[in-house]
Length: 275
Image (cartoon, rainbow, N blue to C red; front, side):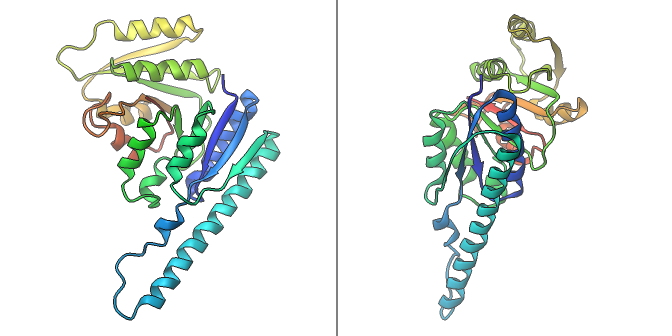
């Protein structure tokens, strides 16, 4: 059940897509939305080492960075409010955050059912100095589930759930099925046999659980590495990938080996991430 959705508003192209998915889900589930801005003005003001005699130029750069980003954020907020109004979705409030943006997301996530924002924009738009560390922070603090949107909106009709045999993978599957964000979407369960001793009957157990919750699913046991997940998703015209994350080992060897962050970096398909 989805009744409250948190939406990150960063003033990037990902924000428009996040807004579209959020208002769509708000309409489908009669859920309330909260927007939180994710702009760290302190980081924007850091323009690096300033050569002698260039202080005035550096100050203009700082002011320009802050102004351009604030304008983009204000546009994102206006778009968010407009979408909520058109979809007749309740916008509970907008929280303006100019400090540690991820602390704000963690704090607000406590009483929301789903958090939506452009996770990939963390890498592409310089919100933080260490994007991998920022993502780990979200996961360690229990922000879940996250819908990490792609840059372009697309209706969700086919969902690929990646199974590894880990507890995180199973939890992600349960979270997705119990929330059931897009009723009627086709679900495919895939497991890559990259281990010498893969867990027997994993797909059968997962499919049985899905059926117990009223979902008809297709299963696929694939040879090769989980790094082929994106190719598999594209081959099956997937609109969403469900993945679990290990907050302790995400950078090392988590449920999809070391491909989770790589997937977040490059995915052009939205990701449903749960820990």
